[in-house]
Image (cartoon, rainbow, N blue to C red; front, side):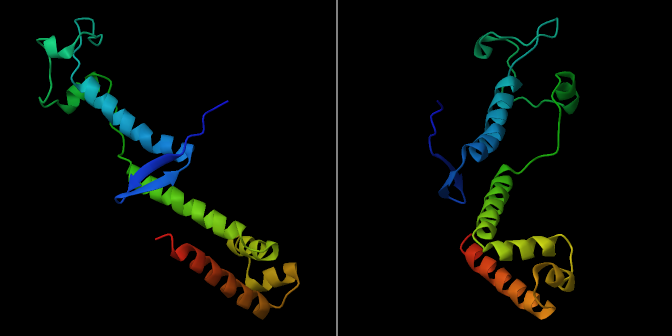
Amino acid sequence: MKNHQQRYLEINGEQVAVTEEIYLAYMRFEWKEQKRIEREGRCRDENGNRCMEDCRRCREYRDGRPVSLDKLDEDGFVITDPIDAQKYIEDKLLFEAIYDAIDALESKNRHIISLFYAGLTEREIAAQVGLSQKGVNKRKNRIFEQLREKLENFR
């Protein structure tokens, strides 16, 4: 049985409780960067294998020396588009808040919103749910106001 420990991340100077999935997604980037820094100092032997000796004692130690992009490519380091992990976490938390707010709506209201986001017009929605077009419009506006109020505290 897994130990479900509460995880926290520091976002904008605050400790925010997050799920294990979010914590691991965020920390994966941190751990990857730590490993990259660790590997950066490691040299390769004549066969191209990474040295596993204590780098501080090695005459080839590269700590602090600039490394060219060509050398990174030779070493097999792939440069990808950077990902802003903090922005990813904030977006993930916002999506969770949106899903929770929608989940808290009455069943009929959730159905109306789902039809609205499916691209149906108010008139088409009205025909499906048994309301007038004006009734759907009023209900839709009330629903969006409820969602705004619930998400207002998120920012």
